Length: 433
Image (cartoon, rainbow, N blue to C red; front, side, top):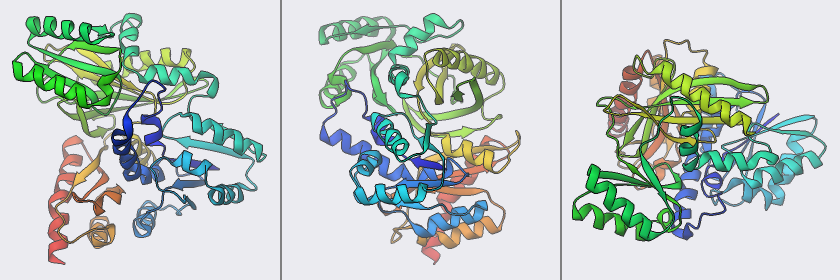
């Protein structure tokens, strides 16, 4: 039996050196709440979902129906903080329900977004109930490897260790005086720089600075208010312009006790330095770069395996305007491509199909607040053979309605076009209705 736990926020705030403050932690917990339902796609085996309150039952039934799956049982948490493992461990009723549903299953596999200390506590508890409890991520004895590899300083180390792997030139600074000096020196020579916190997430904790006075002044203002820049070390690097009309290639790997068991290629759309969406599949990366992405990704994965890391692991690259390949970061967890990877596998898609995944497809929906307002629209798409699957719909109730979605097409352009068409036609459908 699989137990699926969407511990996005717990992973993002897990590092013992992070001091984010309540406001920033709230940003991550709110995001964790929005993305929680995506875990429904991580496995199609016998499974139980651990979810915060607020699951939309119409959406849950529909996506399982269209995929030909039986909806699994859900353990709903009494608290809704965006920290599901912490909530579960403090919720006697939820623990009792989970224990009841696991009865009769000798082997239990815990599937999470990534390794966190709370996950090991749950593993110990489930083992104490008499089950053989396994993880699909790094075991506790090697938890340090997950922490280390997820930090951006590991990229600098790996560039020295893996032949052919490059990172932008830069320095690591340990105080404000070093930061100021490194910035002024690099800006005078190159005109642009990027400052990264080793513990930044999804673009937060990174800032691009230009050599004009406004750029420098703006950075110091950002550094003052953004918690990621309030602790050292920080990395100051040359800002490398991306190749035009080129996304950022990535390789998602699954590492088990035997080594690298699966490699999935993808290409991300990045706005500045923030992730927006991703195209997943063998044909997602422009010709000439797929082989290099695969080779370098596996080389990094081999080092991760040696360090004891296990589970899903994503290696992100950038192709510079100079034609060079650069390692930008490592995500020692499932990535934003996770639900697309699972859907491609579930649907038996061949190499001619790719999936486009967008966690925040924005929609102009006056008067619409839930999936129920879009249900007939998606039923019409599915009846017409369109492969488009809302992966989470909690964001539809917000002031800026949005939802996660995965679309499948014969190439990246087609998959993106389907998502773009939904963005236009879904609001029109609501207005007509």
